[in-house]
Length: 407
Image 1: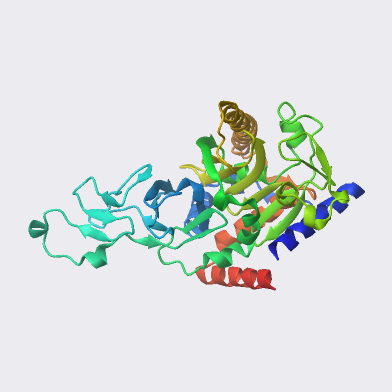
Image 2: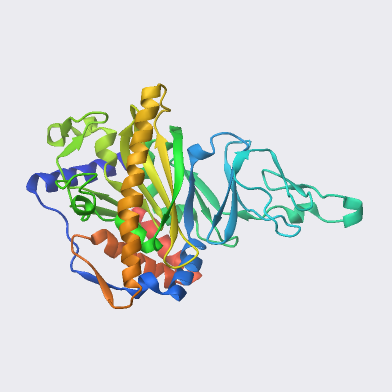
């Protein structure tokens, strides 16, 4: 069923490309400029979106082996991911149940974590197994003092966690069947080649760019070229989106050759055609395919709000179908990843920072999203909807989305 849906999307893109048309939104949409600059709204978004909804916290290939762990901070919440002995992933609140000190930092491989403050020790499944100087401390129920566990889910080579210990929202409902389509990339068998973190503007300013092909031949004329495409059709699964250029051609992996999809049967459509474009996972992930180092690759951009309304951080993961083997392949892969850093850091995010500074003047009351910018329209509608939804309404919203996806 997932391949059938991918084929249907591809054929729709081919038809629009052959006819030189695209799908439009019904109207131009106006978004208050204050939605980018209001500090109180920003705090609500962090609380009601990033600390309440499932987040894609790591590609599976970042934690490939049992015992692998990763500690990170998301909007003030210390998170610990661990790969268990049985191959599953667990997500914990990275706070010792004695005094709240994080039990580990960074990444590595370990079966146990000892808090660096008083020496309490936890297994990587969260169980408390050692209290320092137990006779002096006094009797405690270790089973009641395990690391607190967040809801987590792994699918399509990606790991999600919800930073709400009491969340009742099933992550599967939240994804609305989208993960079954993402599985077409094959990430569960891919490898992590490199990663880095960039500073960016307001998180919505930054995310707007991932949902927008309109700017490509203008902002990126020196990197992609002034004749680059600027049209996109959009596909939706709840708040998650795919945008792809309507075209009857797709570039063959590792070659400058353009494949004419009108001359290919559905059975012969390659992964390049079925997964082309940008895939976004609300509220903070962008996935785009590239080729470097002799292998299929993808850049997964993981965006989080920063400490203030005008800041954000983005971790870029460059994942590859196979680890490059020769010096030439490694060099080529690094060149591709470095090129993407220039595009995002020096063009997208530099522009976003200037844009945010201008909006903070308060001299502009609204920004516009055209009929050709449907992705940005839908994104801001979902941000408003989910920021203002109660916990009960949240369950109803995604129960309905999951039901619709299953029909």
